[in-house]
Length: 77
Image (cartoon, rainbow, N blue to C red):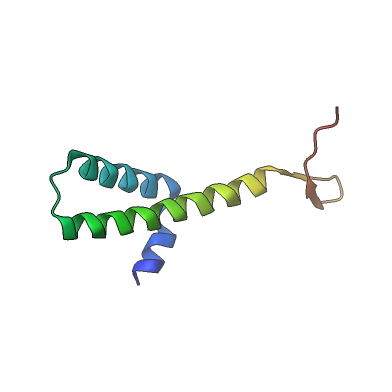
């Protein structure tokens, strides 16, 4: 169920949660067990954000041709 919740978070929500975890860990007031759990959660959030960015990049790098087909966008020099 937690995996599904991670997938449903928007990029912005996941990034905000990741930033909060990083701030908590940087402050150093977290017990070791909690720090390990927070680190694990942060890594999952980072992976999720990375996947969403990669997907967005792939979509942005496509161009819609006049006939409705998608093709890779290439800059001609």
